View 1: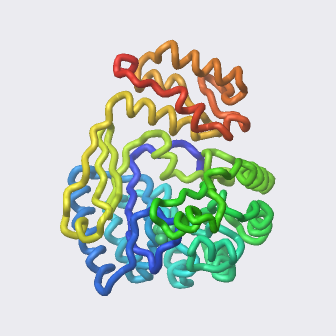
View 2: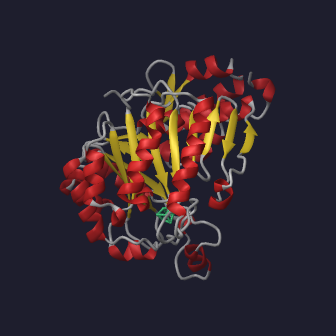
View 3: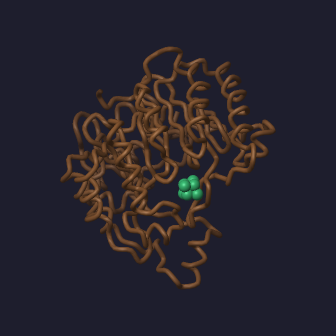
Length: 381
Ligand code: SF4
C-alpha cells in the first residue's frame, strides 16, 4: 500500500480507562469502576449514531486510542468493533489501529484482531529497562513487553511501538531498541520526548530535586534512536515517527495533512474545515451527554497549523503550492523567512516546490517553524 493521504476523514475513538495511572500521564483516563465499561460502550453507541447523522462516512481509517483500549477485554473490544462497523459502510478499511498496553493484551484479543482486515496494533512500550519502566510508574515490565510482542508479531503484520525519550537520569535506549528490532517484526515506531504533567508524581520528584529536569535534556538520544531505526530499514517520516516502507500511520497522516476527522468518547476532538469541537474530558459529563467545547478556527490559525504540521513531516515537508492554493498568496516575509532558514542549513528545498527540515533543523524545529508563522488576517485569505 502506498503512503498517500486517505481520501476521507478518519475516525478516532477515545477509551478513557487504565487500570492505574502512570506517573507522568497527561491523557484523559480514569480507573474503571463497576459497570463503567458497559455504560461507556452504551453511550459510545449513541454518540456514534448521532455523529453519523452529520458525517455519514465511510471513513478510511479508524484509531481506537486511550487510555488503554484493551482494558475493555475481548468482549468489550468485539462490541466496539461491531458498533463502529457502520462507519466503514461495508468498504475495505485502509487501517484500523487499536492501542494497547503490554500487560492487558491477551492471546484471545490478538486472535480476534488477526481476523480483521487492515488491523494495526500500537503498543505503549515506552522504555526498555525495568528500572526505567518503574520510574515512569508503568504497570508492565520487560518480560510482559516481550510476551505481548511475541504474541502480536507472530499473528499481526502491522505492529507499532511507542517509546518515550528524555527520561530524567536514564541513558539512551538506542542500544536496547536495536536488540528489540532484531527480535521482533515491528513495522512502526513513535518516539516522543517525555512531557511531565503539572502536579503529576513525576513532576513532584523533579521539583524536589530527586530527578534531573527533563527539559534540560539535549537531542542526543533522539539522534541515536533515529540512527538505529534508519539502520534497521525505517524511514523517518514525521518528527517523532518512523515506519518501514508502506507502513506510515495513515490515520495520523490525515491529521498531519490537516484533513477532517471525527472523534468519539471523552476528551475526543473532531475537526471539520474551520470548526473544532472537543468532548468533555470527564467520563461522568460525557456519559450525561454534556455538549462539546466548540472552537472556530481563523484562517490564520489554520494556515499556521498547516505550516507546522507539514514541516513536522520530515520526509515530505511543506508543499508550497498546496499552501498557496489553500490559503492564498503568501506574504514576502514568509519567503524571506524560508530563505533565511535555508541559508542557515535548517531547511532544504525538496522536489518540486517543497521545503523540509534538515537533520540540523530537527534540533531547533520549534523555533524554525514558529519563525514561519504569520499573525495578521490580511496576510491570509
Ligand atoms: S497507560 Fe497511557 S493513558 Fe494510561 S495512565 Fe499510562 S500514560 Fe496515561
